[in-house]
Figure 1 (cartoon, rainbow, N blue to C red):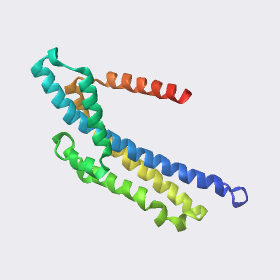
Figure 2 (figure 1 turned 30 degrees about the horizontal axis):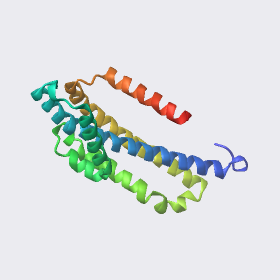
Figure 3 (figure 1 turned 180 degrees about the horizontal axis):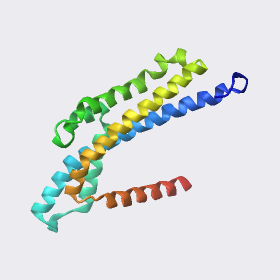
Figure 4 (figure 1 turned 120 degrees about the horizontal axis):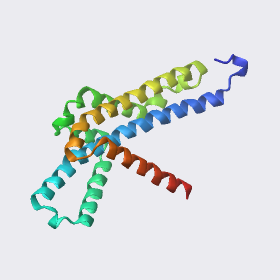
Length: 185
């Protein structure tokens, strides 16, 4: 660490905010993963059942896409707490609700609503910000862990739906390319 003469408070303040953003971003990744999991467990299962029962004769792609978008809009309108309540009905992930998902929700709520207010005094000093950075790094890990547990629990279900890890990687590559193209505009 630099001695006090070389220390830049402004840089450490920016770093603290960066760690906050990183932790909150990971909380949002977990929340989005939960919405996607519910979509896979609910919407795709029902769609697949109808497709198999009716055969592809009656499949209406525009209707499917509109229904999909409406379903996801509904999931994204829910709070994290309500997403967790919705997830309780699915045995594939219900065992993760307590303690992992509820803990992630509680930590996310703390981060969003209380962190800087309750930690204002610590934020005002160099040593305090060092502690905040460590805490924010730990919070990031809580959300990342919850997301990883969710992803692992969903792997057999994705396989049942016919979604392979290779397909997931291709979808992520396509998403990244589209995102890069949008950012170039």
